[in-house]
Image 1 (cartoon, helix red, strand yellow):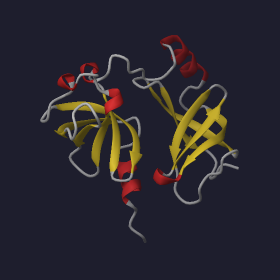
Image 2: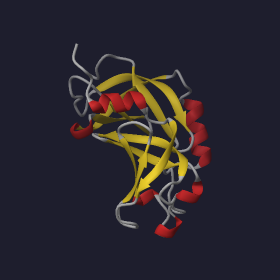
Image 3: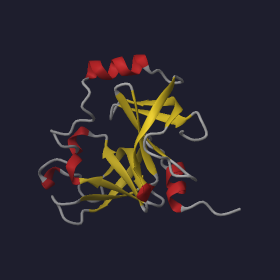
Image 4: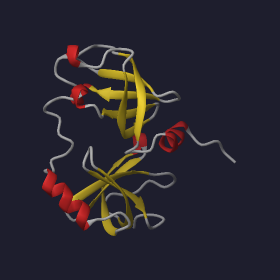
Length: 177
């Protein structure tokens, strides 16, 4: 049996939507790039400058231990959102959804609901694709054959992420068609 690649291992270790604790270990160019987080095991975490406070002096300093939500995976990196609002930009919005809109979406698509969605974007570099259904979207990872834009499939709602106002889906079909 082949050993799983590092991207798959990171997805299993740090699933999208999980809340994890990490320690800020580097700030390569304060105010320009973001910061790097030690998660206790590979890969390293990264917080993008766009979600951090505008003033680098307000960023968590090196050595700070805090919690994050896993946003996305890239090869060799887990993209993170600080859950402590002190460490986020005041202009950062988890999504364009208002709180009442988010509550409505959660009511329409409870955990376990099955939706039919269409693949709208495919990102080969980190094996992710985006699906749209009704007025919602979700991002998923894949293994094996690359999904094709325009194909449809059935997906199950597996989680509601209140901090970022996102739905997490899992493919109910083996492959989008």
